[in-house]
Image (cartoon, rainbow, N blue to C red):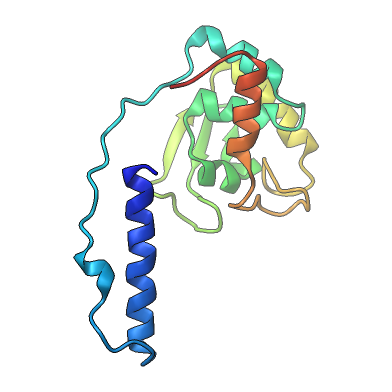
Length: 168
């Protein structure tokens, strides 16, 4: 098990004993406090190269291609993609206004931003808007805002595998 996993388990146990103590079910000291946090080595992130984008997009289903194309060409976060509304996209000015994240009326960084729409992204956005039955550009299967639990990482990993791309 890696150091980050151990830290997550330590935190879970720490909270469990703290709650048990608050509920009067544990009277001793919290044993997890004596377990030191592990140092997690920093890794240099790996990104898609320009030449890898077309094979990845081709490996995605028609359903997921517009969403991942938008993620690739705009670097929007998952929550920002989920909160993106049709009214946030202005093809006339070539800008996407990013001001929502999941169910919040603000982004994770608490700042609205205007992101330029790359020419390559336009057809993907138009397709997503046409297909969407709601105000959201990328709704969930029920037409409402996409769930934060949507398994997008799995979808991307499978597409990367089909495209023959291995990220380290």
